[in-house]
Image 1: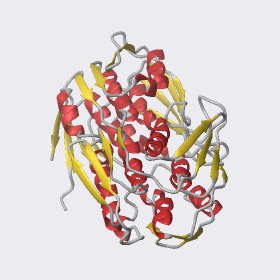
Image 2 (image 1 turned 180 degrees about the horizontal axis):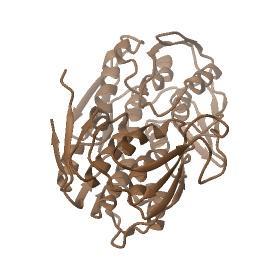
Image 3 (image 1 turned 180 degrees about the vertical axis):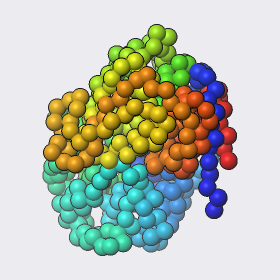
Image 4 (image 1 turned 90 degrees about the vertical axis):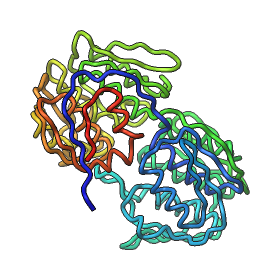
Length: 433
């Protein structure tokens, strides 16, 4: 199969309007939740991303029907024909492990292949496995995947060692139909988690949010169908706001509520960005240039780890020394060499810079970066290692001197809604080959 490439010619400031659809990190989880219903469920404002097709393939493999039309996805539950998610789906994304709980409810047994996703650091399955065992499931880890069996899942208390988004989702999807009450302590509270909980509540689940990162779920016998409209993707919205700022342009982003971008907006404002914010759109510009900043990523409501990749490119165009401290994934900075090859002045360190010591303190993980701006970036031949790094490569190419060739574009197409169309609409000379 011929490798897909993007050829980018810098074309000045990016200006215009972008409308973001529902989050890549939300739509696939909603599709899995819809398995648990006795009637069809419909998800509206869904993005046109590769992740949807991958997840639809998994659902159809086990016996569900998935109908897609424009921005609308309908999942029609059916008898589980095969409680094994096919090995053909090995390593494609993180969704199979989230299907264990629903499959145990529906079939009493399950097999899912080894998880995949972006190579941004260890995302171990031990939290998921420990949680399912706490519900009473027999879980066995094999070389090719995970086997599980349970005649009935029983509510329990789950103390997560870290507020993991994926583990919180696994517990929610197992708890809603488990017998009795489940309490999740140290739960993740990202907007996509809340959105999933609200969708499950529409299906008939009994979920309460308690102080101090606790979620309480009272199991029910059955769930029905539901209809929901996903809120705009906060990662995509931030990425396009930065696309305008980094090129000295002005991008107006529609479709993402301000409350999903509170921390991001203030971070950019401290760097010199000016904002116009309405109920319909958010616009950022930096007519007087950009100042450096020190930013630490964290779990919600902190600065999201998925925001830091475009921010790193923005740092290269800020006048002075900026610091980034990544605390969520230990290998998130794996994309930095590609930016360095384009002329970015970035040094990475295994110490905790720009914030208090994190869980990667005293490890060999290169999780802090110092960026010197303004860097004169030059075009290059770059391979995108993951979704978010892919977007950062596009931003670097947009501001560089000379043309760039970007490889591995399937990553960005897996996570962003029609990125070629969006970038071209903002004035970027982008040729998809």
